[in-house]
Structure formats: structure tokens, C-alpha cells
Length: 435
Image (cartoon, rainbow, N blue to C red):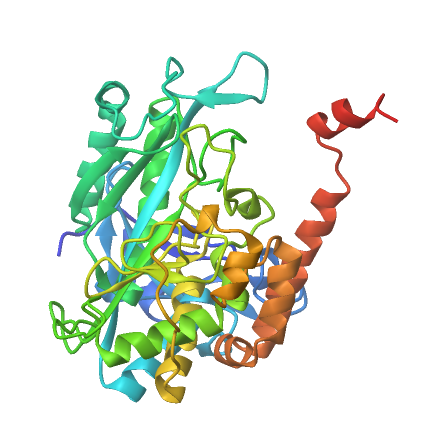
């Protein structure tokens, strides 16, 4: 393997934001030994005080890959250790434990594919404002539009090349449903590798966007009249890459799913409210989880706990032999998302949970009475509601760690309280002279 002048000892905080130290090449072995040291209290969600021990980022040798936008630099994905042991609050450690549990119970590897959507923005006319980079867009249905895909092709191609140099195989790039919104898809891998790839993708996309005078935003819903940015997760399982134990062509329901896949799906349905807190983890996330409001005519985000064949209004879509969870958004921490999904699905496998009948109707158009008649419940409509559901979900609390869930909910409730105290300009204009 090529040597580099510098190595980024990199991990993520509770929000999934990459954190790192730059280590000169002559000291790179320290990353794989004791690790690079950090003050744990300075990192969000690590459950540490200013009087605590060092948080040590210990490198994974298999994760070394070039950082093309920094001269002669490579990144090293790290696990957090405290006192010489994997730290129970570290997102990657939590994901590795969940994947090990899946392997122990099923004898299989858990595979995932993530589809990151994002907005490309540029500075607006007033200080601190942002507008879509493809500002001339006026289409109500801009999805797959060539002209605006072409207008930012320099950025997209540079990002694709950077990902390719890091071993991330991009197979599709498109303009998405909202003006200024794009999606870049890379091939699936085992759950840990996919989370690593998504983190690298965010690092690369934001750094390269800055070079082009742009902002690559993963805010779930930056514009009220446009659809939000999802992070759809595709799931399967197998003994090795290419196998699919979730697939069964003889499925009498015609979905191409195995009995194991149905039980896993049953777990996702049973734990959907608590999962939503991890999959849609910020206040803004719930502006995306609505049935209408996008000028394209669809929000593409679920609001009901239902599943269906090729139903993009459902919580889970079945694209043939695998599961696609549609509730996650672009702000989700991919390691925590993976861990929560695995624990929910494993519970379904172990208890042989039935997901109920599929729904292949447009769920946005069904009334509450029609939904109730089909036994379909709603997803949490706000982050506080989702946090309540997470705290009440014993399976997720035990799987992620009770102390971790307590730290996660404390941070997220503080975020809710902070934003609730703010009066948005639109709210002020509506009410200041109304009553």
C-alpha cells in the first residue's frame, strides 16, 4: 500500500459528524497502537466529562484510503476506546456489536446499501443566505432533468473520481425530485463498510463542494415547498457478498422474500416508532415526513407504518428480494441507523414476527378511517414523540445500550427545546398583527 505524508485518524460523533486529527506519516503507527487521543468531553455524545480519561481513536488498518482533496493524505477509520476498551458510546463500536449479534444469531452477514440525497447550494444575495446552485430551475418536476445535472457536472464528476480512488464504486448519479437536489448511488457492502463509505462520501462531497464555491447540504428539509433529502437503506443478508438469504423466488406473496426476510420486516414494523428517532434524528427531519407540500406533487417520505411491493409511500418498500427502509433522512448517523435496524430486525427473526399484509395503495390519499381499517398506524410526527417511543422500546434500548440511549435522548431533547424557543420569521409575520 502506498505511503502518505499525513493520515486522518477519523471517527464520528453522536450526530454522525466526522471528527479527526491529522497525524504525520512518520507517526502513523500510533493510530493502530494506543490510538490518537482526544478530550472526550469535547465530542458530542460520548458520555464523558471534562475530568474523564482520554478518548482514543484506534485505527482499522483495512480502512486506509486516499483523501484526494488533501495533498498526500489518507483517512483511517477509527473505533473509540476508553481505558483500553471499545467505548460503548462510540457509534462504530455500537454498529460492530449489532452486526456481530446478527452474525451470531443467523450465521450470516448483514448487507446494506445507502442512497444519499443532498442539496447543492450557493451563497444568496444577503449575508448568511443560501439558494440552490442551479438557481434558474423553475420546473415543478425537475427529477432527472439533464440541463441541471449538466450544470454542476464538474462537481459531480470530481466527487465521483474521489470516491472511486477510495474504492467506492459509484453506479448512478441523478438530479432528484427537488430543485437543486441530487443523489449519488454506490454499490452495497456489508453494513459496517457501507456506513464507513457514507461517512467518507459526506467528507468528500462537502470538501469538494467548497472548492467549487458551493455548499453540499444534508439538511433533511431546507425548503418548505420542495421534497426533503432521504437516505433510503436497502437490506439483505448472506454468507458472503452476492448471496441473498432475504430472497425467495417461490414466495407465495409474489414479493420474492424469504421467511427470514418477512420476520426481519416484522421487527422493523414492530419497532418503527422507536427506529424513527434514530433514522430521522433532528427537528427538521419531521418537516420531510409529511404527505403533501412539495410542488412536484409527492414528498416521497413515509408517514405511515406500512410496507408494500413497489410502494414509495410506505415505510418499507420491497424492490425485489430485499427490503428498502424509506424513513431515514440525510442527517442520520449511518452507524447508529445500522445498529438500530439490526436489533429491530433480529427481534423480528427471534420472535418470528409477522409484518401483516402489504399495502400497495397510495398511503398519502387514505383517510384516517381507511388506515385504521387496515390496521395501519402513523409514524411519530415530531422528534419529541419519536424520542418517547425510543425510550419506551426495550429492545432498542438494550441493543444500543441504555446509557447511550439516555445520552442520545438528552442531547436531542435539548435540541428540541432550543429550537422551540425560537420564533421563525414566517410565524412572526403570521401572528404579529393577527389577533
